[in-house]
Figure 1 (cartoon, one colour):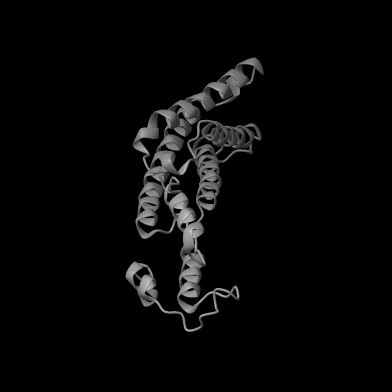
Figure 2 (figure 1 turned 90 degrees about the vertical axis):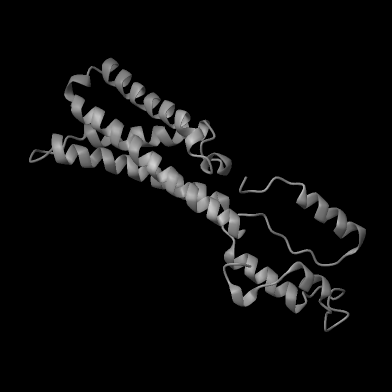
Length: 209
C-alpha cells in the first residue's frame, strides 16, 4: 500500500466497492479490486523463512571467510596451505549456525531485537571455540594452531555477527512497517463464516513479531 503508490487502496474503498458483475463471487472469480489486492500482496510479500534461511547462509559464509582471511593474511602468508585451518574454520562456522538454531536465535522476534540476543550469540560463539579447543587437545594438534589466529578469529567473527544482526534488524523493522513480512489473505465472500475467519486471522500473532 505504501511501496507502490499506483495501487493504493483503503478499507473505505474496499467496503464501498460495487462489483461490476453480481455473479462474479458465485462463479469463483475475483472482482477487479480483489485481483489488484491479491497481485500486490503476492509481489510485495517477503517470507520470514526466506529471510532466516538467507541469514544462516550469510553467517556461515562470513564466519568462514573471516577465519580464512586471517589465516591467509597472517599464518599462511607465503607458505603452503595447511588443510587443518580451512577444515577447522568450516567446522566452526557450521557449528555456530547449529548452536544458534538450537537457541532459537533465527526466530524473527529474536532478529528484531539484536541487543537482547547478544548474550546468546556470545555464549554460542564461546561454545564453538571451547569445542574446537577441546578437540585440538584430545587430538593432540592444538600446538599446530596459532593462538593469535585463534583469538583474532574469535573477535572478528563476533564483530561480523553483531554488525549483520543490527543491519538485518533495521531491515526487518522497515519491512514490518511496510507490511512486507505480515501474514496476508484475500477472503472472497462474506457472511458469518467470513466474519469468523477474519477475527480468527486477526487474533493470530503476526509473523514479524
